[in-house]
Length: 240
Image 1 (tube, rainbow, N blue to C red):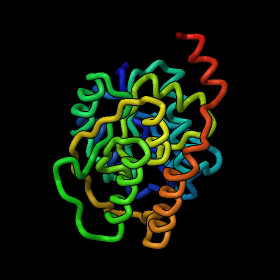
Image 2 (image 1 turned 180 degrees about the horizontal axis):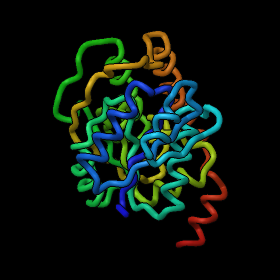
Image 3 (image 1 turned 60 degrees about the horizontal axis):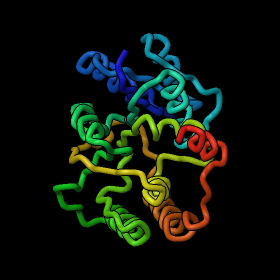
């Protein structure tokens, strides 16, 4: 058993999931993984069962936040020290998992696979939105995150516990901003990501714009009123 769990949220990824998981199993067997089938309406779950993949099959679609939290609950209950969010669409590249883990072992709580740590962002509306989120996080926390929208994020045991036991945590830039305010140590590691080769992303231009506006409002306004889950705070207090 590995001390690191790769969590693969998958919603209608029948065209990608086999390639993603087979590559992990063949080339990176030192890491454990679990596919979170988030109520897919296509053949994602059937493919996973037929191939014998490690699968958590959710009966309904919970969305990314709910699906990923289910994966972190699994990581918490099975005593993993680290967990990484790894997309089921084939965009994330597993050769960066070990460098991210090594960075985590320096004492960080969250390590982000950043596309822009040493490389410049392209000039596009999507990258403009990413830059605005980065600026908002810096204004509210004093810390610069160059790629706040990266979905490739690794979490320490402490963060696994917090996500697993709290009700209102999603793997999004506003939660990273909130956790920074709570004292979490966050680092970035330069990575490259591939383009989706099959299937359709929900982040079309309209949805991407709505997402950026929602995240900006949350970081600049809502996070100022957010309170930590009382159950977790009490549990943490007992541990001190």
